[in-house]
Amino acid sequence: MRITQGTFSFLPELTDEEISLQIDYALGQGWACSVEFTDDPHPRNTYWEMWGLPMFDLHDAAGVLQEVKACRAARPQHYIKVNAFDSVRGFETMRLSFIVNWPDEEPGFRLTREDGPGRVQRYGLSGYASDRPSGERYRSPR
View 1 (cartoon, rainbow, N blue to C red):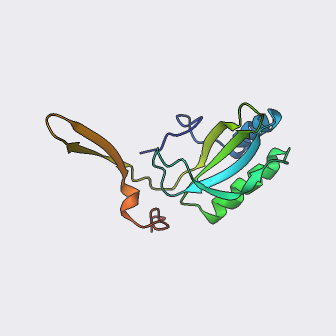
View 2: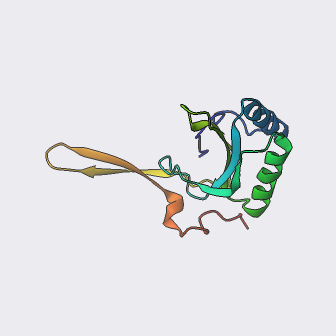
């Protein structure tokens, strides 16, 4: 199962050149880029761990791509995404976010159903990855 969150999520994996073009676009709009990673890609997990600080003063895509590559080297079995933040007053929000790295193995999610009083049914998602502790959720196949 492939996680499909963020912009470009239904497209094939972007090459570094294509990632650089998207970063160039974001920087051209005046948006600040940042890199984040996680081993828990649950759709409601919006707070991924930051790789360094947001790059508010950067104007070259090569600098952001360098941070992406460093994060990939340090966390090869994690999800990694690039965010582009618009700090213009009135917006002050994420304008672009896309995943640039996936683990080799993606265990997926299970749908849980809870029957309540009467005919009430509640549904929820839980990731198979969360069965293992943080840091051990994705391992390279040996």
